[in-house]
Image (cartoon, rainbow, N blue to C red; front, side, top):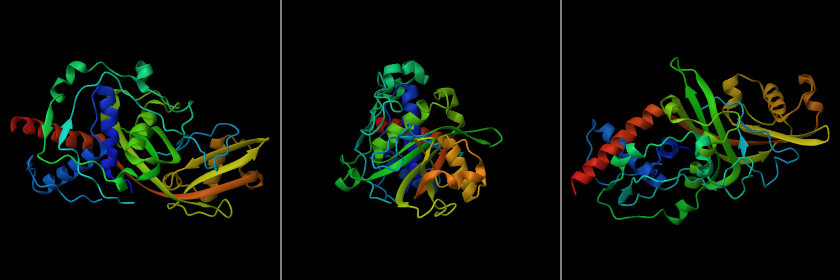
Length: 334
């Protein structure tokens, strides 16, 4: 199940790229978020030598001719979503590094098509709106220790893999939510690398939008959806609103088309099942009459589940300010 820590990790990956610094690892974020919550429950007090806490744990049309229901699916972007299994969490290394970096590397997933996933974001950094902030990051180049032995993620944690989607939304001053970028994959990804890759790809490579700029960070909200339980539908309406996401594929004018909506989309839009199917088909490229959707050739559907989690920039900023303060306390106590 997605967590707030996953969203904070994506925020840290994005802001680190824009600020030209190194982001924290996922285990570090999870540990520090747990400690931040514990600190908040204690009334705002923090201690860099505290005991280790207990951890608790809409779609781009497919390339023409590609079968979206095959096992070798490439990446999909979510076109119309306005949205935003527990595993043991390993402790972070005893020393957290916050150095600046000269470039941002975003390696592509092995299955990603070259048209949608860059091999390196830094190869065309101006395209992504990176700003030269090296003069602003000198305060984060220090190393701070939390007095713990260095631990690596357990083999079970390293094996934790999910199909996933990363969504960026903007929130207006009146609270209106607008999609700013969303890209994901149906091929299981190692969680940390998958979140990192798709946080950047959704922010910079969603072709429906310009790349996210640093000035937009305060308006952003992040939403993570981890997918599971894929089941072929006996017919296109064999799924439940609010529970299932849906993938469809069909043949139209001799070509194969496909698209997907995440579980929250239909409910957020107030659609019926039929309206959802019609909308998906139109997103995929179908131009027929709405009442004729069921006559389209070889219409197949797969339902899936996925519980998402989201958070806004303000949550990330409060947490990151606390982390930076903690870093300073750690250096001063050495």
